[in-house]
Image (spheres, rainbow, N blue to C red):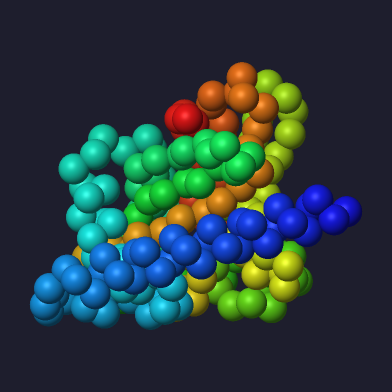
Length: 190
């Protein structure tokens, strides 16, 4: 049990470090008149601009169509040495009017819902091992994913991330699932 708690604390530390790094990059990006792009938690709002722009240059791993004109573009799924997989992407409003981010994206687990709107309902399915991996949580039950989602204006993009336990090293493809979106097979690098 203590190993799991230590891993979660390490994961939370990693998430905080990533948030601070993205925040510093966002603060030095100059005067973007489009900001704020969406209402999000402080840990992701400042880093939203540069990450989404960088994602446009890459060929996405998958593009998933959701409800009300929302599009999720997955740009990477990277395995790290700590036993985690981080999925990065951008959530875009492809519609012609502002869209409230569906509460269903948070999933239906009480512990995650209690922490506000997020992408906590995301899962990775490893068909080879017949296992489903849920978004990780910190020691207070907060999901290790983009949180504080509310409304995205027409045409706006929001950089997002989700962190999962890593499937076995020989598993390189998984099915990504998020409530209200189509499913897609993605490749894990690293």
